[in-house]
Length: 266
Image (cartoon, rainbow, N blue to C red; front, side, top):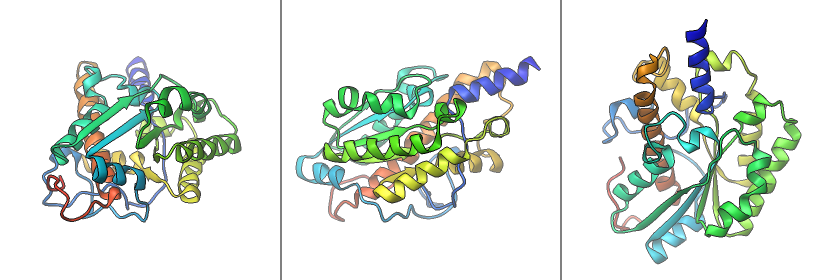
């Protein structure tokens, strides 16, 4: 039906895909000052990965530069404005959490790009900005186009190595979740490759699939069967929640000194 097709295209435009991972990710304490719609189970975000370069820059120079590279969802497809995209919301939330710091999040996303297309412009579009952290959202276009999975994994690891050589941290962001979309396209091998690259290269992987699955299946965020007239409002809410949760992950993974001036975790 036309209505069903429009909804599927809406989610594909946001870069939806699938991730099979445990619920040990960007978790929010029950009493944290996080909007109800954005909360996920658990009390803390636990990871052995540390954002070394980011932490050093924050402590030594009181500034942090993040570059986000990705495709449609990182661009903010479907949102009301560029300021509503999740990289912009990430910047806003980090500035709230780290008052007095110079924090800049630069968005270098392009629609429907594969990991290889992004990797080819890493040096010019991303590393030339001398970031402390590169947040790399990918996987959707590769799965849709059935890119060779070994090639995809090699591209990720080569890109991570290039980022590390430029003395920056990496965070991989996996695609999103929607029940209609995951029934249509087989994303699982690409998500597995992202998790494996994260383990081998010791980089953070932010699992949007599990985050969004909780939001949808718990009913706390209405992301399915969205009327056309409400799609922009829903996209804005989704991106704001993602930006807030990614900010929590970044702050926790920096392991800043206990006496470092920052806002309480939210």
